[in-house]
Image (cartoon, rainbow, N blue to C red):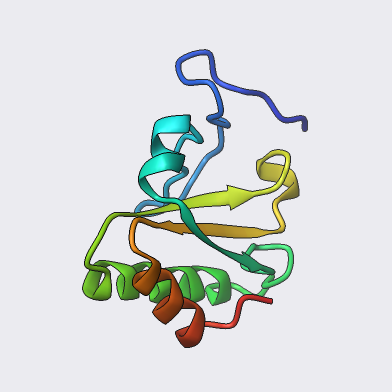
Length: 108
């Protein structure tokens, strides 16, 4: 099974995702509005293969962002394609949100 980009949005990868999980496009406008980046290496199904472990860890981080961030945030996959992901990238509009997130959650 190979990777393929969708034709609708450059930077978007086609993947079947569980309800509530989403991949954001990697556009220049989005990167400039959320410049403060925290990479969570290992936040993927390969590293966390037990049923529900990845989903719980992802959901915990996403809920923390929704409840605590005072600015915008974006969650993107890290990896060349959905079959070979190695983590998630959390990008924040405000440096303070990125700092508190990094203090709250392990990044490696």
